[in-house]
Image 1 (cartoon, rainbow, N blue to C red):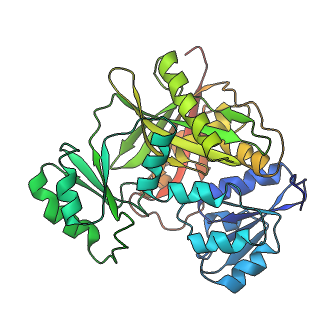
Image 2: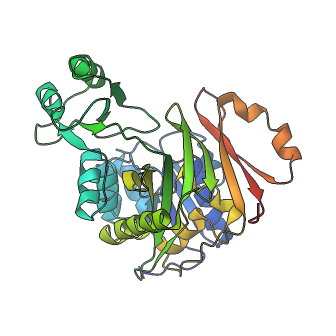
Length: 368
């Protein structure tokens, strides 16, 4: 297989959620076929992709067949099992690489990675046991957040600890029903509570040639740990924006990334930037790029993994992206009636509370 994949090639997508759906649509615009691998039937991505394999991530026979039908593989969420990625990588390129995925899957590795590239984070300590957790309070003040090292998202696997006396109850709750891993591998991290003025994110794309392009920083507001709105541009100083972009660029380079990475950060009252976490895949806070930029995060990812030149991610409009959760997807009339609004429905059949069912992006002039 050549490094460059031309139109007509097939892109394999691990995962079948809304990010995979939007990625498949972007691939189709550039003339690529897509093949989705997902354990769930009728997943959102399968409804718009060329091919779908519905099988478990540990079904090696299905994975081998999938790998031999695609020209490159990527993923739409970072909790794909390592064995799955390794199996596919034995037959076809996976972009971004397993290295990027492995770091993003583990909060302890992720925080150590950012320290290595000179990016500050909140104070934290790895936690292997209750004894570790109690000892960690000597370095991390309360209130603090105890987070599972792996498989946490949208606030899952997190417990707020207001004082050290709550340590035992928090540890019992977060480890309930879990098989604790080797003492060499942290089960959790204790992270200091950060006083911040805003939450921002930057999405960086990096191509096969090492060229990097960044979308400008945007401001994010969460409700109950789930992203509610993303506003472009972020209301931050040029100096803070430059710092944030620099962190995303260094992360992409250090990962030897081929694809995109979203880096979420906190802005402090003095203009400092602290990294929260990263995701080497399309990101909810990048949905605004679909309508407000010359290119979007999904198209940039397709360009990067197929060896095409990256596009200029210039913003031509201001934007506010709002997630539609649960039953909110049933109330679209006002959005459809507003010509400034761009509505996306993900094709999920069950509108559970807190479930991301779609999003709407409202554009305004750059002068506003």
